[in-house]
Image (cartoon, rainbow, N blue to C red):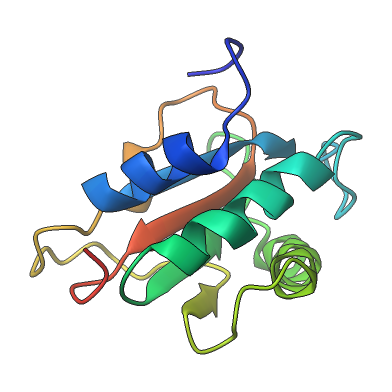
Length: 136
């Protein structure tokens, strides 16, 4: 999932159509709410892709946690605020994105939902966009 060619708006649009998009170019500096350098193109492409897509999407930032330690939901909320601002600045209307810091226990009831733990282990913490039931 990491590496390879950067995500462009068409690649993002395809992933949104499948129900889940991990913004690979958006990573946080461990233990902080600061994004690693180079995140801007991901948000620009996302702004264009959402403009071409139908529906509403959920934006979430998973909380960091070491094994056996409670997730840091305060840090997740701070990160979500940063990501939310970057999404809005890049032209995504706030009516198209629902922002959540931590997803509740997974209860499958829609074809396009993805459990938060479905993100591969060891994946750097970043931003994820999921299609809602009306999103694809």
